[in-house]
Length: 136
Image 1 (cartoon, rainbow, N blue to C red):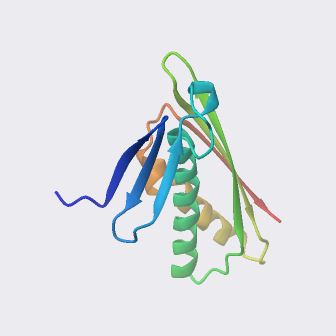
Image 2: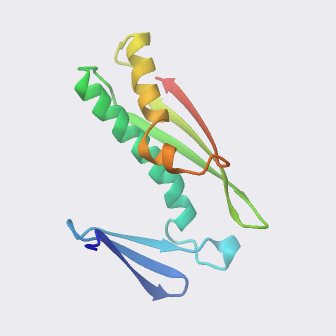
């Protein structure tokens, strides 16, 4: 096995992940409501952010392939947690997309691409994924 990433525990409920090909790193902290400092993304924050990032990336790939002029996108992400056991039970994402005059059919294409991205398909079906698209 050739790893693509490594993760190192730094102490005080903090980890550093490294993407081996680029050398880029990401720090995680446990959240304050789970004994952590909350000074960085928590692992569950990254799950939710990964979903939004995957959706936006797949939307952009689809737009590029179909010659759709997709504008700036900003995703607002809300994580819904449950206890006993502690887990993510919902991810709400509001995609604010710059209005560029794309047709309703083109909007449907990129929205379908988002909803069927690899991360969306990888998450357990018990995690509710609520995604809204706003063209501004």
